[in-house]
Amino acid sequence: MIAKGVTPILNVSDIKQSFAWFHKLGWTKGFQWGTPPTFGSVCSGQFEIFLCEGAQGGRGKSTFARTTGHEGEESADKGVWMSIWVDDVDAIHRRCVEQGLEITWPPTNEPWGVREMHVRHPDGHVFRISHGLEGPEAE
Image (cartoon, rainbow, N blue to C red; front, side, top):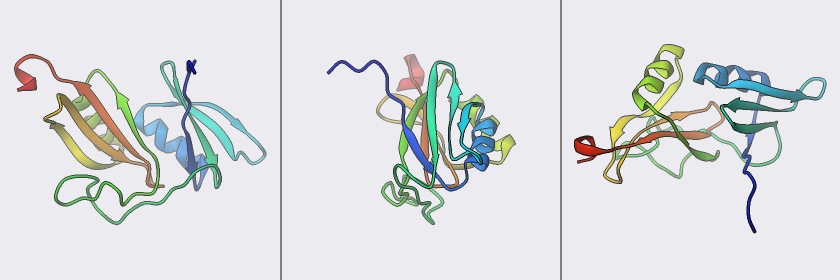
């Protein structure tokens, strides 16, 4: 198989609230379908994520404040985990703080050569927002 693209589908409890959450993260609404809408998408650059209210996949937010590290549990959230690669994790972190989004792992230089943070959607989907480290920053 040669994939031509991949579009994740997230199960959400409220599609309108999810559109608003993604807007805070800097994404735009791609489309919505149904009256009232129960399916749609959000877009950033050339990438798209489908949102499906109450179907197609799982969701579930954990009670842990962190999604990793000694205070967290990587398997506690029942939603999708997704990596998003950006140019500047710290700029995204500032936006998330300004918008009041739940940050579950602060920007951290990880031993595998990326600077990474985690932000959690209200339905338990976790986004690992990262950029690669180079030069002295990677050490």
